[in-house]
Image (cartoon, rainbow, N blue to C red):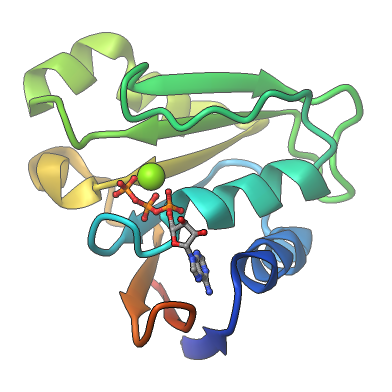
Length: 146
Ligand SMILES: Nc1ncnc2c1ncn2[C@@H]1O[C@H](COP(=O)(O)OP(=O)(O)OP(=O)(O)O)[C@@H](O)[C@H]1O
Ligand SMILES: [Mg+2]
């Protein structure tokens, strides 16, 4: 399966994240690829808002991983979200932080920015989402289920 959509604003990208997560089951890993500023965190903020997660929604660039316990599970049964960013870490650090456990959480949704940094430990079963800046405000977002 491959699906592509172009968004015209940050709000549009957030809305797309919110729409997409309605069809995502717990236990899923979403890998978000794309350059700095291509819209990965913006997309995740839309997912978190749609799931009713408690704010603030911080970028995990510096905290590596932020976990959100949802006040109410999603319609598909997601009870928590692990939003992680591998930009500044090595595979070893990520493993020690518990990446495998997050992915094995049957009630969790794992969303990872900069997955290519830990390519050697990525599970095969995942959804890859690639962000490409077309202009200042347009982003092409492509989904591929592995
Ligand atoms: N259509 C769009 N979708 C998403 N973001 C957009 C769009 N148009 C403009 N932007 C801007 O692009 C930037 C995207 O930043 P964001 O933090 O989401 O990127 P990122 O991919 O997470 O970067 P990083 O790799 O540094 O974590 C924001 O400043 C946002 O306002
Ligand atoms: Mg980001």
